[in-house]
Image 1 (tube, rainbow, N blue to C red):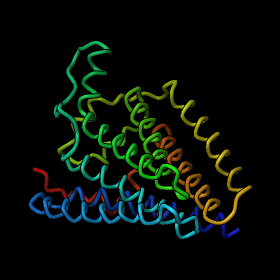
Image 2 (image 1 turned 120 degrees about the vertical axis):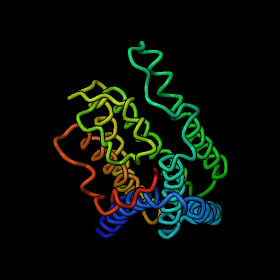
Image 3 (image 1 turned 30 degrees about the vertical axis):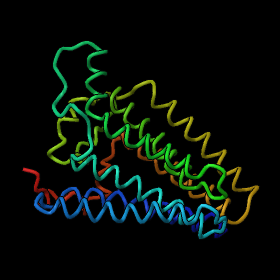
Length: 255
């Protein structure tokens, strides 16, 4: 039972604490931003080196290391995006009264550099871990990217809760690219596809042992959390309540 409970608990704690840490760091005073970015980048470099060091480690510890380091890499990208360092060539609100293709083009432009950096990191992980015994980091980063793309598309098409609390003041213009609707056709597809992958991962965990089993459970738990985040977009809930401690407005210094 511990092969399932402990990895699931670890994924939940890492997801909650990691998300909160990114939100909190992006709300520190702007005059500390350069030091914060530098420290975060060094920490991320250490995580990348750890991924390479554990590429042949198929133990339980190796699975946890690959998973955790991939989440750190992901967190760095989220930090640089929310901090306004790596966004896109367009840094203003959506144009009013434009057609769907122009609106889509503008939405892509506000995220372009961020998306390209994520894709480049994912490709680098797959290339660096090709043929390795422990590709958990590549699996984890790919899963995070797939679910984030799904969330962004659902926000673009329209959801009930726009989660604008998660955006620092410097990025509030992104809210103009979201739509507030009770339903969009992509959401059930995202949820059903996610549930199918969760079932597949748990089936894989049932027929494996050691580090591979732990990796399957970690990924399944992370995907369940991503599905919960999707549900929070359409249910009458307040997602930001989970990270109230990290969303202190008085800590914002982006003026």
